Length: 85
Image (cartoon, rainbow, N blue to C red; front, side):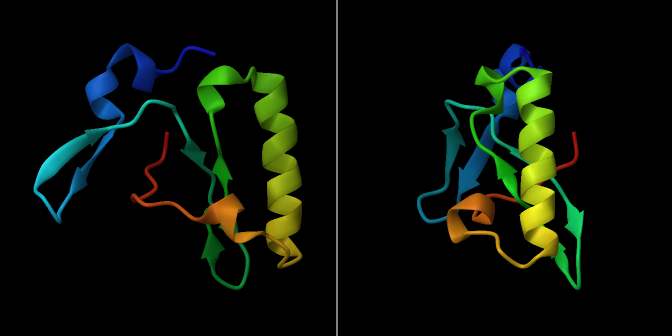
């Protein structure tokens, strides 16, 4: 799946405040907001390598685990702010 982040790779970046540099990410990871008692942001890692069907299945599985409070740290831990796509 080709995404806007791949077409405009400068968009797929972050800022390292420790050394004041721009970080260009090599993969496209997508956060999905799931409303539970708080808002969780599970991550679809390497979304740029998946088709829409695979992403849909993964979103449903992550949302189900988020609602059950069973997300693993690696499923929602991100080092940058989630932005809606």
